[in-house]
Length: 71
Picture 1 (cartoon, rainbow, N blue to C red):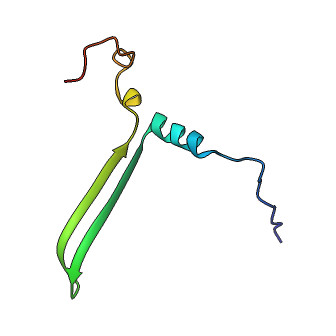
Picture 2 (cartoon, one colour):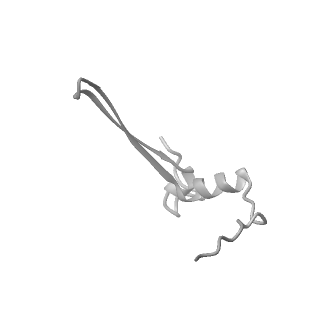
């Protein structure tokens, strides 16, 4: 038999820390919405979004804000 161990409750992650990690690396969320009638697909919508900070998307030379402004 295997032994079930209790979860480690000492390790807590604040919402601010989680948001910082997500924005530093970026997250892609994708999904599909299908509207169908009688098993016939009428409308198919594919959704994709990228959530990231601007600093993590810019190259290192432009991220110090010393370059040209974004136009």
